[in-house]
Amino acid sequence: MKPNILLSAALLCASLLTAGAASAEIPQTDALNRFIAQMVKQHHFNEAELKKLFQSVTIQQPILDAMGKPAEGKPWYQYREIFMTDSRIDGGVQFWRENEAALKAVEQQYGVPAEIIVAIIGVETKYGAFTGKYRVIDALSTLGFAYPSRSEFFLKELENFLILSREEHLDPLQPLGSYAGAMGLAQFMPSSYRAYAKDFDQDKKRDIWHNNSDAIASVANYFVANHWQRGGAITYQVSAKGDAYKKALSKGVKPDTSVGELRKLGVDIPNALGNSEPAKLLSYPMPDHEQLWLGLHNFYVITRYNHSPLYAMAAYQLSQAIKAKYLLNQ
Image (tube, rainbow, N blue to C red; front, side):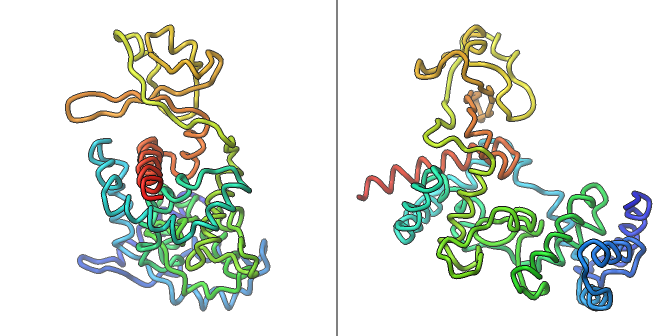
């Protein structure tokens, strides 16, 4: 879709969300009409049915507000406190106990540790307690038609959601999710749902809202699809002498140097890692000091779920706390 059409649609949506208004009916813009025409031509949807469907869709101001306040905007020491709580750790232990058989079977099949799967579900939805309050179609339409900077991405997800609803025999007005349109315990976007969700108990439904075993297997399958290495290390906290290590600090999370090169820069790295091992040196600021961590391949895989290194580290540290408490009570 042409940027000027999307921008015009966004401005029209914004004008409909008058001061104090939480929502507004989606306007019949060229952008919406082009989207419907695309769904009809490429995926053989019924034009009249889609037009009727979108009459029930609303643009939500709280969704636009939430996009401007991501938790990943906080410094590490504040972000960490959101997830490293007694309630989330205890909840993870309880979730593990209640789903022990599924977690064990999935770990054996996929090679993703149970504690990592549990922690991801804990970070995403606090083990299913908070799977989202917005209709997915409202969230994706709001961000697709009224949030120009990410409209292309969210319109693609809206396309996938409509196809998913048809494939899974869902009423597209019913599923609830996050303000960004993520769904279920695993908080999959529609494209991820279609590609990676699993029917682990073979009941012919891929239900990541209510079926814990499906959600557990879906998280593991997502990691495997992104090349999780069975038995591989994830991350190590390290230290460094002098300031030469700062040359290795750069944007991104993909391992971009070798352990050997980092050792030459004064980074003290466990002997278990060979010099040829790819790694990423990451800095996490604390109130009065800096933590250095070494992100390995599997750490990078965790960031395929959410690209923030804060997210991946929170998930890792939560997983270790849950595992320690789970084993303590065995």
